[in-house]
Image 1: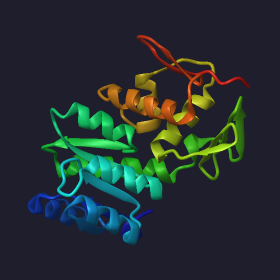
Image 2: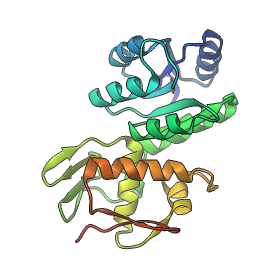
Image 3: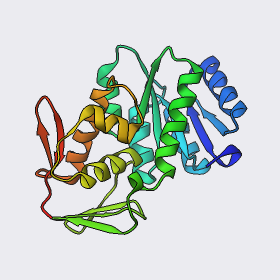
Length: 228
C-alpha cells in the first residue's frame, strides 16, 4: 500500500490535533478522513474501510477502547492508539482489545508517521517471511497465505500484530524468545523499551487461543509449546 490507495481514519476529539495529524498524513500521501467521537468513528470505519486507524483513547460518546472493540469485531484493521503518557492501564487494555501499537502524547508527527508506516509494513509483508501454506501444531492451524488461524477447528480472529507474533513463535517452536527479540522481529523496534507491548499481546493471544500453547519463561521471554 503506497500513496493515495492507503486510507487512514484519524479519530480524535481535539480539532487542532485532528487537523494537524490529518494534514501531515495527507502530505505524506495517505488518504485521510477524520472522526471526532466514538459512534461516528465506528460508522466512518464501516463506510470508509481504512487500512489503518489512528485512535485516541479519550473520546465523547464512548471511548477509544470501545471503538477498537467494535471495529475489530467487524473487520480486522490495524490500530495505532494515542494515549496519555501516564495512562498505562488504558494502554494495556487498548493493546488487549486489538490495538497494534501506541504513541504517547505529546508526540511528534515524525514519530507518528514512522509508527504508522511500520504497522502497515507488518500487514503488507508475508507472514514473517515464512513459506506459503498451512502449518499445524497440535490443535493449532495457521494459514500464512490467508493470514487465518484455527484452534481445534474453530476460527480465531487475530489482529495483524497478534498474527505475526504467533507466526514468529511458531517458526521458533520450542525455543524461548526474549522480549527484545520479539520486539525486533515482530514490531521492528531496535530497542527493548516496549516490553509491556509484548506482554499485552501475549496475554491477548492466550485469551483467544486458550491455555497450554504459550509458555512464560520468567525473566527471559516466551515459547510456543504446541506439540508437532
